Length: 465
Image (cartoon, rainbow, N blue to C red; front, side, top):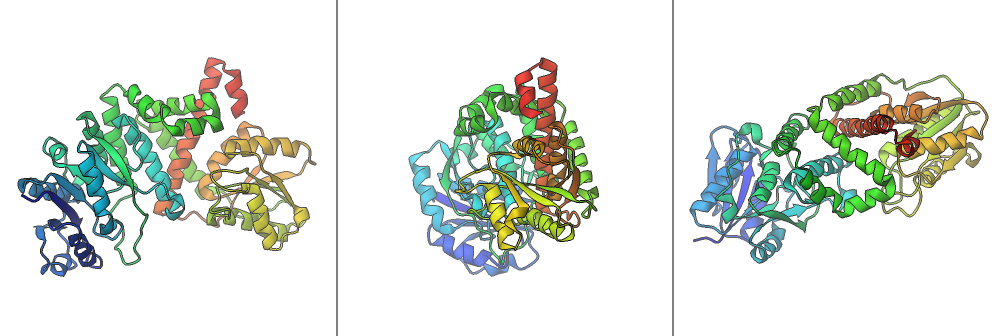
């Protein structure tokens, strides 16, 4: 009997597979590689290595490959099964830590957790993971740190009683669903911190940012709907967590209650209103002009800093305002945003420092450095503008952010015209995720506005208008 097996699904991983397998063999002598119909010579790369090599004649998807490897391991009587990717995103050197934690906690799935290092993550992937974590944690009924990491250790006793679909349509659904199913069977996830790695020689991701997210969303929605929305799971996973306390300090109890209501509305409507808002966000992002012929106040919303410096997205907003000032020197730039995250300076101060380094005179810059999010940006901008002369207000932000900024500015009665920071909208995985996030936040805002008016909650209405 082999006590531990490592299962590595591989599809066109010729650049990385041999190195990963060799390093894995140093920590576990039973390695199962499932070549999922590769056509680039992946299997040949490891044909001489002491591994159990399984080949799918055609590509069957990650879920099917994982399950085939797990079944092979269970037939050998293993007690623990570790899964990891073949593209170099997971370090085989972390395997001993998984084993130690798994042996000490036999009724847990040990999951890699990468979200503690936000700075190393591409922004769109970080927020996509956080979004997934919220929903999967709700359905599982407890907080899950990283629901999307494939580096895991499963107890064999759990795998023997799992009964989940693992066909090609569930390729990237399986690993999310297994956490929900396991929770119902009495097995929770226990995180172990792992690094964020994106190898330069790895092949492009097989994950479809639209189709696979929709499949995962459909699975979670069905799971929640079939349990009457499982409100106790929402309470256990979110309200009792440390995230609740942090958000409560920023948005207040009313705002948090509406956030939860917004999520219930998404489920109850099958996401149709959210889909409508996504279409609206996309249209505004695509249609807003890059050039506006006007002199006035250039309103630039802040953005979370990266190690006290402006991010590329934030820089594009500031650069647009700087270029505008060259054409219309009578204009003035107003930068919005307080201290957020772990930054030691405000978003507005970092934006001002950036513009000063680019040669913009300090006399042309005003800052508001107490707001924590876009709604507060607009509320404080209204107060600031009320003490200035009656010039045109030009709201400059990134294309993905335009629709929500427009809605919030209108909501607090800041008259403005929109101007995009980028010349045109480029649809990439990153921008799709950002557009979805903006639609979600806009959904929250509209639900909050409607709810506060319907219930006559004047305190809430004053907070958002």
